Length: 52
Image (spheres, helix red, strand yellow):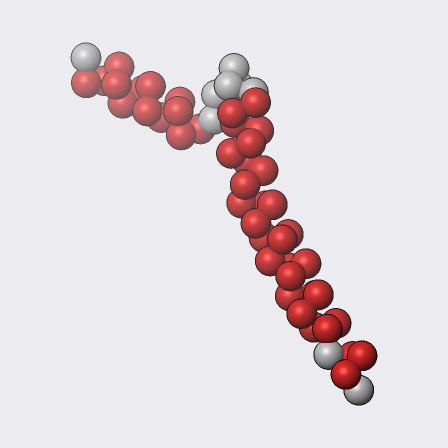
């Protein structure tokens, strides 16, 4: 029975790692490819142009 105990922890860690990678990958892509504008930066640029 103790041999089956680590399995849920492994699955939990795997799920947490997948969520973490899903959250961090867009940030990594944004920093490694800064020439591709995201929707947020486009909106910020439009807002700045409207203010000026």
